[in-house]
Length: 207
Image (cartoon, rainbow, N blue to C red; front, side, top):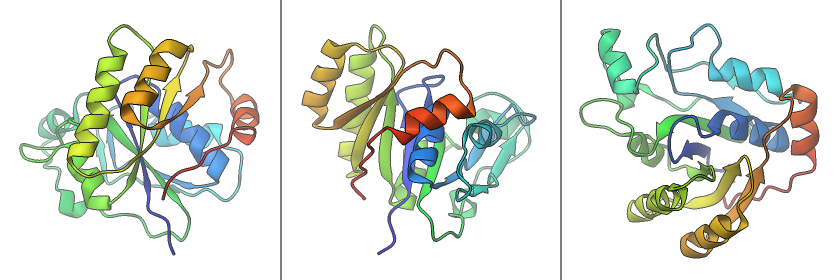
């Protein structure tokens, strides 16, 4: 039976989704896809993940929307004179496990009607939620978990990027009833260091 895609989302922007995506792509030798890229078209998140992945099995699929401005997708699309249409965001054809990286968090708008969580629901994807330890992150992480639960979307793993806070991570794991993985800050982020970390990481997704 073909596995469900894994959707990487975050509790906010700049939280470490792209690094987490690269680690999962390398560890699982999965394909990668970023449906909506807002800004940074000269060096996209797809480019960044490709640069960090060593295995030869992973395929990097082209974005459905490439928007020129670095804002929320709905605003970037409006500035580019584009309307994001969920019907036109179609899963790439692959026999491999697919890692999908979202833009921002769950309630980021794609247009006047649809949010990022609607795209997750459309794909019937497993969710990996990326968090980071800072004052307020317990609330932001547990709210994201509750939103997923309210939409009957399975949250498989919470990944913490950066420094450890055992107290926060313990309480989040307890209240979300979700397993935790932590990806440290890399002193030097490159293919070799990320590959060595990914190789030794045990990842189990419930799909």
